[in-house]
Image (cartoon, rainbow, N blue to C red; front, side):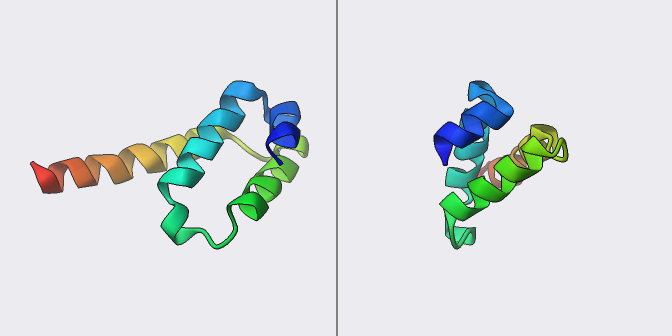
Length: 68
């Protein structure tokens, strides 16, 4: 799945996607399946990593505010 993601979205974006998936692993039933879905969207031109990154930043910002 990772190799296909690299071909569809590039190595850097695939690495970012995997990092985001790992960060939310407790909320994702099938990380490999999720990566495959995002890879299919990237092939169709319907995926952008920006919203995924922004959601991760918001989640981390909320956590950082809670911990002080």
